[in-house]
Length: 498
Length: 140
Image (tube, rainbow over all chains, first blue to last red; front, side, top):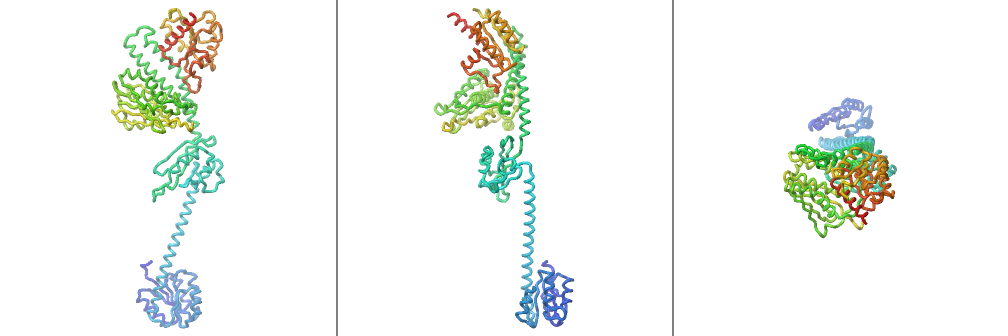
């Protein structure tokens, strides 16, 4: 707009004034159109409509200046109009201003007396135009924002997953219809409302309360939560403002996985049924093989004996797998319950080590157990059979994956809130990829060494589940050829809590 | 009394399971009569009293094996016969009937129990122990 020449309309019945204005204004670089009376002026304005300034005489034949000002103002809000008149009185000036004139130039005038107010008028017009542009822009943006927001709101509202947004003050600031359906008794609560309002859903409340401070990105914390007979996978992630990079709160998404859980239960029940059916015939096969191998049915040639022995080993490993499958499915279907009583973890670890001593001896592996005499015997709250299974599994694994004449060390430490049991071997170790998968069901590291080691790929899954059922932790440190150390943490018995 | 002269009754409703136990015992020189049905075993015992009984829990109905063992202990003719329970059922954690200690065993009417699969050596060891104890008891 600035590149265009500024156009000025001059309306006056005196040709001298018209020409004088034209010359003075042309010299300043403005373009000038002229009209000799009100009607002609209006016609000229309506043809062009791009005048920045109009200079209008008050006293003209036909349509007067005041009427023209009024008519132009109706059609153009931005034009700057000056009244030029020889009959300058306060009253006419006020009247002209009321009808839309910007200023007042008394006749006669010098070129400077004309140009200066016009320049001011042009600046003023530019300012008001810019202000108008900004205002329009802002209004447009607001409109777009409002539209976008209502669009997102509609989308969130229509989602089948429940959505809940919590700010840093642990207040719920947004939730959708699905969240209302899922969380009992929250439909009528006005927002924002403190998280305490949903504390009747105990499990959900404590999960959201604990995760409300999460602010590292990217992090998603998920948990299965049961609310009124339905199971939901609740995933919590921080809401990060992209420009600032800090968390403004958390967003929790609820997905109904009840049907999925039912399928999982059906799968577990099927596996459990198969395992139970397989157990007895397997026992018989093992029994028969044992009879033959032990020579109770008479002498057998060494070659056949060796084959029978290998079969016996595989039958036993299959039996272990079946028992572990039964434990896993029992845990999955919730039928497996642990009975936690105060127990001496050193004693359990010692018993576990003793039960593995024969196997260690066969491979001439040195099996050692160390603990602090004073602090070692502080009780943990645990299921004795489950703990026994954990340690036997870990020690047995250590022996299996350590070559002959190696070492397996069991160390029991008291770390304050936990008792820590480490099982360290100087065996074959694991690659980082193997380490990542070691607790997965049916995973077994495959290499020259492990090919000869019978195993099920279930032992460590069972161990991990057992440890987690005790609110414990299990971790592993390992490198190929450097051995492995499995560390288990089990919470100590807090006598105050019972 | 030498081992060869001791007679043992074995009850298991699975033919092969029965066969495995029978052959282990026979390998150590015991005289064994095997039965798939506890009722037949009782009929046989009335005619020929054994020195020891080994029974499966027999899951046809929930505790056929246990009512069998209690029947033995209740019968004045048989109550001095040691009973060993051999079962796979105890490893099923859903059925928490694993006996813990002597009191539980007594309640169940058995003198010892083994999880299946059992170690033949340990079974034989227990059989010998129970037979010896019984003979000593009779000697008094």
